[in-house]
Image (cartoon, rainbow, N blue to C red; front, side, top):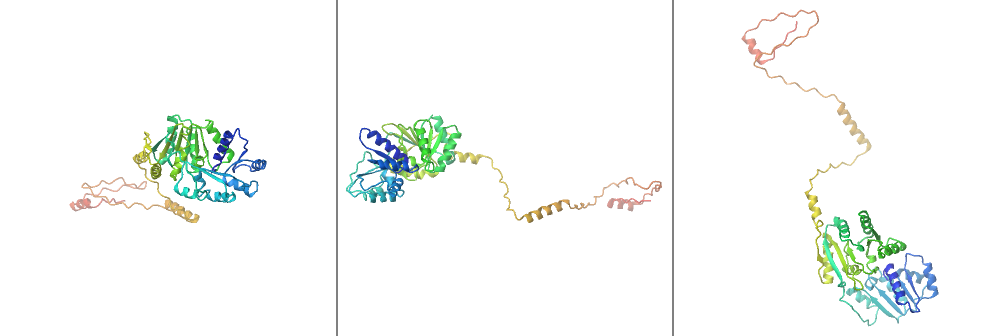
Length: 393
C-alpha cells in the first residue's frame, strides 16, 4: 500500500469480508510503535497489509519471513511502481519465492507503468471495468476560473452559500494545506489538514472526525487521494490542480463511489490552465466552466488598477558608517546655526515729487538748524534723480 490510511482501510475490509473465515491479518506501517507489530507477527498471520518501508524494517529485524508468500497484491499499482516506491518494491520482490501469484489494482494505468509491471508478471491477464483513465460517470465535474489570490475567498463562499457539510479539498503542498485550513477556520468554517508531516495518531484522529461529520472541510495533500474511502462523500475540491493528470482522476474518485453521486470542483487560476488542458486531454472530455459572480478571473487586478495611484516613498540610501552619519548631522546643525547674510537693499526708484524729510533725532538741548532756502531749478532737477540728503547740525 502506498499510504498508511489506505493500509488501515484495507485491513478493515479484510476483517469485514473474512469475518467467518479462520484468517489472521495484521496491518504494518510506519509512524507508530513497531513493538506491537512484532508481537502480532510472532503469533502467526495469514494476511499482512503493509507499506513498503515498514515491511522492509521488519525484514531487516528478521521479524518477518517472505520466503513462503503465495500471493503478492499491489494496490494503487501505478503509484507503487513509480519512482517513489519502485526501489522498495524491487527489494521486496527479490525476497519472495519465484512461484507466486501477482495481482495489481489501479484506477489509472499509464503505458510506462504497464511495461514496468510486465517485468514482475508472466503472461498477465487484464481486466478493465471501465475505460482507462476515466473517472466515474456519477461524478459531476466543474471548474471555476479565478485569480490565485482569491481562491480562498471563493472556496469559503462556495462552502457557505451552498451549505456544504462534508468537503475534501486537495492542495499541492503541506504548508499550503495548513494555511488554507487556518484561513477557513478564521472565516467560521470547521476545517483541519492532513498530510505527511503530521504524526499517525493525529492523522487518524482528523480522518475519523471527518468521517463522523464532525469536520466540515478536510484539507489534504495527495497522500489522501489514494487513502480515503468515505461513503457518500458529496464534494471534492481541487484547490491546486495536480501536475500529473492521472492524480486528478484519483482525487475526484473519492466521491461518486458505490453508486452514489458526487461533485468535483476545480479552482483554476491563469497558471493552472495548461494543467487543466492536460487533464481534459487525458479524460478525452471537457470540464464544464461556470462563472461565479464577483469572482471572475481578472476582476481583482482590474479593481487594483482603478484605485488612485500613490506616489511611492523615496528609497532610502543605505546607511554608511556611524561616523559618517554623525558628521552629516553635525554639518546640518552648523549650517542651521550660522548667521545668515543680510539681503542687499536695492536703491529705490525716484519719485516725481521730492521726498519730504522725516524727523531727525538729535541730542537733547541742541537747537534746530535754520531752514535752508530753496535753490534754483538745477537743485530741483537733481532732486528728481537722487534721494534728498538730510544735513545734521
